[in-house]
Length: 280
Image (cartoon, rainbow, N blue to C red; front, top):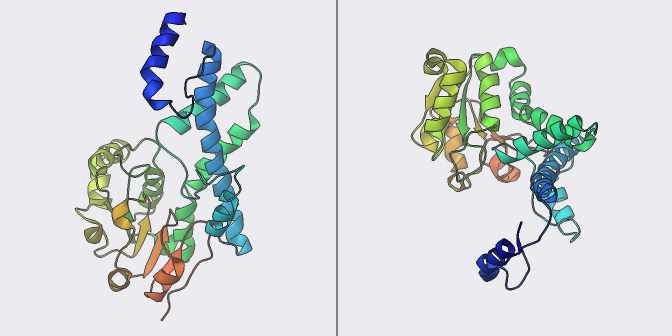
């Protein structure tokens, strides 16, 4: 680090720092740790909310109401308080693992980050467990056709690294379930990864990549919302009630109103929310 380099960086970032200084000078070790710590903190917030969501569900509370209330506290804020199917991508999983490993190499056990990782791994199985429960056991779920909306680990990307959808599909394939999946941009990448993991023959037998969200629900027993793409936010619930054989939606991102879904004649299962039966 030199005075000249610091001056050049300040000039470069000046247009973006007029109201708040965003350039901080520090030693190399501190800079590295800052980057890892920031991502690990966000990952920890997500795992905390997911663990709280699972508690809220058994207590009869709604994690969405809890999230909103918590977010009003300025000491907490509203960012990264959304319960769901767990985090994925390249940064959060990698950086949490890196900090845990670095701690281990220096005789430091990072208990919170180890728990963050365990909670996240478990959360990726939550919707599969809900499917098993809804259908009355694994044997009754076996061979069913499940529609998946969204495959990428988050919206607006085709990144499939550590995506929760991969864990769900793995569990469904193990029961011989047929998966009809649709993602606006990640379908090609997802197919490549799934074929590499399960083999082309298995994917040919059990996986269908659909051309649209509506097409994915054709001949499906239930719908699972995995990734909260904007085009999934306002579906025709009445039409889905006519299409889905088991008349059920599993909302992995809590983007739907449970009462609205139930009123349309569909059962609703979310994350950290009380289950709703279809209104007859």
